[in-house]
Image 1 (tube, one colour):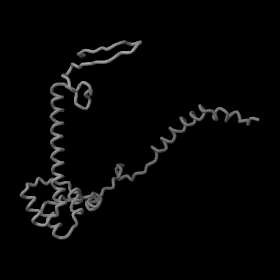
Image 2 (tube, helix red, strand yellow; image 1 turned 120 degrees about the vertical axis):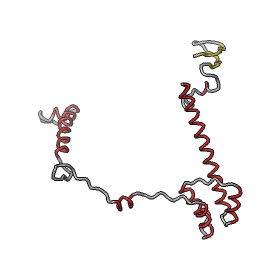
Image 3 (cartoon, helix red, strand yellow; image 1 turned 180 degrees about the vertical axis):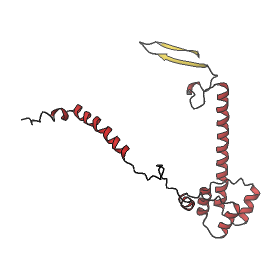
Image 4 (cartoon, one colour; image 1 turned 90 degrees about the vertical axis):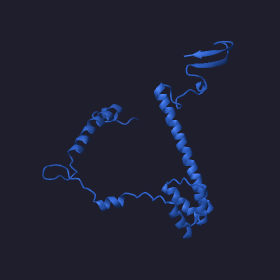
Length: 188
């Protein structure tokens, strides 16, 4: 046995009725939000803005870790800081240490652990490789911009070894589309 719904509520129970109610009530909710004044205003009616003091700003802004120089590394090594902690401080600082072999020998003589020296050399080598790759990518992008070539990111894998506009192709077609071997040089 079906439940009877009153004739007034019957159109509202359908999907379109719910949509109509939603469309009628949403502008009211927006208007109620616009009429509510949650900000404090000054005598001229402008909203008051709460500003942070310099001390609060300094406390809320994190200070970046200082980059330890070679003297700091020697001081930490002599004071007994473990090499893993020194390496973490170097990583956190993000500094670069282009050391010559003589400087490395001098740091070793002053008490810097070999693991720290190995990390310094490896980090500088990785930074130099990243710089070289960045320079090459910038130069290639500049050439692509000057001559209108597509950048390597969008270059077709099969066309990359051939001059622009030429590509050899070879394949074997199957029935019903084609049959036998085909090939040639595609020019576009």
